[in-house]
Image 1 (cartoon, rainbow, N blue to C red):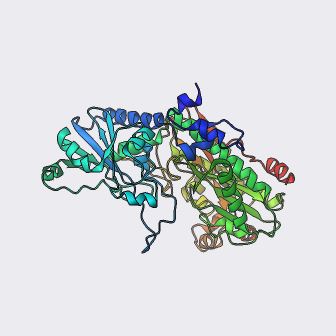
Image 2 (image 1 turned 90 degrees about the vertical axis):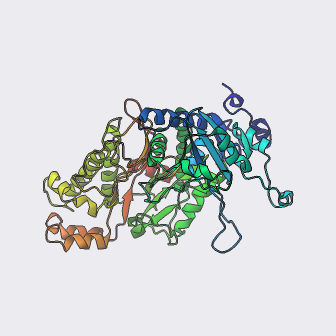
Image 3 (image 1 turned 120 degrees about the vertical axis):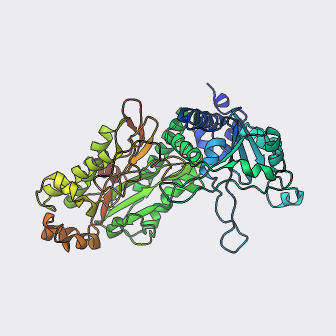
Length: 506
């Protein structure tokens, strides 16, 4: 199948002729310029409708579902919008639309999708920005697009029994979903009585998003491959005496130069030395020191999807004996989890497996005393070294939706694993991060040593040697397949020897 068949209606040949410096013919190299194929979003809609039917929860068949796009909101009290607009993820998942000022109507009964766009009637605004026509938008998204002025009229003509709106709470962020807004006036006031804020509509959509279709998987592999190359490129620029932010800039420059990227998945974390024990350290304003470790947690957003990878490397290119010992424990934890991932696996069990590997390693180093692993798990001792969950779903958001849903089976939280972003059983199509770590956080370790019930597990004299160590985290992006899993970021150098060999070539 040709690129033109995969991406019908694009101006790909023109793009390729105007970018002679780009050697690859991979269509995804241009995704920030031409977008993803509309067939990907058509599959998303089909899967959503199938899941609505499969749930058998009394959803009215003669109904429509209405979503509103995100809005371009000026910064603070100015009229300046100084960021790249990012579409609301649910809206993008179902439509592929990247602009603001849209509504979408999904007809549940007829399985039809219609877009409504706010048409700026003042043509003088073309002076300041490109105002697309309805025909241009319809061609771009391969969907019927009408003036937003006709939205309520068309709903009135369609006369559905229910108008479902997204309503609920994102279980990862705790933030409520913003339903579509309407300005009901005569003769449409009666439609207000048909609005239904059934939270299961949102939860079913979130669950659909957790199971990637084949085109999403293909693109996310490309996205992660590109992020791996950016990490490797960043490794090669590391040297003592430069600021942490230089690594951030190297990563961003690689992604922008090679993929026309405009947005990051999140603010890069480039923590050197003791800064690497702060989980979301984003200052990146300290100088790299010879002999320290540098923790690089960096991902990119391409085509609306996110990557999220963490590497930990020595600034001078050579791990010390102490650094190698801690790093190898974390790598063992990462790999033991990935070996066991498959459909039906309960995610909390993987977190406990990760903790078990770490605890055994810390006992071998005599940082912890030789107590039974089950006792250490029961008393949450690993929390003092890894105070975060093992990972999270990944997709249109870096911490993607679907972690906790009312209708998905989970087991009771007997181990007190409150830091987990999901307690679900994994399914084919899930993309999830595996990111164990060991951090030596002085105030957290001090709190353990002051607790009479906890300090008996610690070798205080030994652990004091690590107070200036910082931390190590190793994060991979993993796809759950039909029989097991695939580590999407497997091409990133991970062993200490692989990393040292790469950094020798700087």
